[in-house]
Image (cartoon, rainbow, N blue to C red; front, side, top):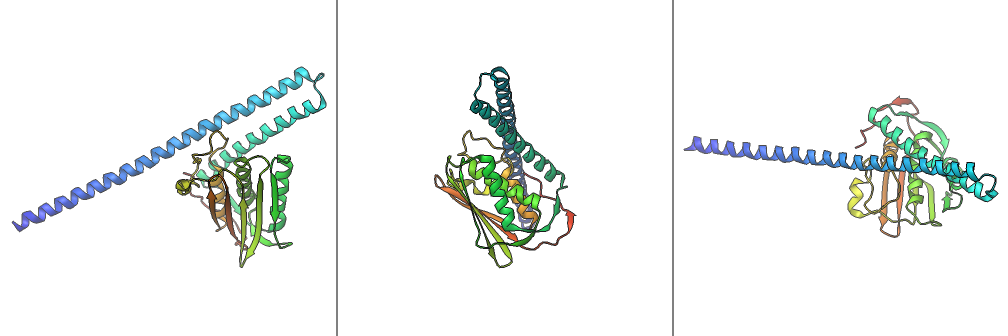
Length: 274
């Protein structure tokens, strides 16, 4: 009887392990299907944005060609500015896709060099001011005149550029976007605050996944890659990124960046964007 009891126990344990394994496999399958569906939705959206931008460029070009002699100088300027804006949006989409492709191939180059972080942040803000032509009020604050730091300027510019672009995109016209830089021991901290739509709390854990877009963005354009790329840029620097947000009030992202890196050029694998 004892032998039978042990056999029954073993069968029950085996059955339980099989059920657990099946549940784990099903969970992983469901997650993969969700990622694929999310990726497909965002790729479809990017395709739509590419076509819309190209159509807008073509329309502005046709209007310039057809009404050039009758159009006022102001109208011609508007057509040209629309073409420039659409080209910029196309470049942003292509840049996101290129960054995604590089990270999936694990061949992103990291090259830290010594820069002044104050001048670097100020330059990014000024570039956005010129490009956006007053659509939002952009502010930069730092108590220090200089802050020497070692970082990859290309990767960090991409990260801050994506965060700034999102802050502007998801904020009402004329809203304030504030970039603040300060030193915290051996770390530099950068905060970026907006007055935008906010991020739902229940979506926080998905925020840095490639192709994920918050449920409240509506029809606002976007690739769903910007935050994933920003996080991976911070990971390369052994830094951190966090955020706090309130729906309808705004969002603040905070970046923590070590002031010193190893200074070497190396090719390190990035975790696949998923």
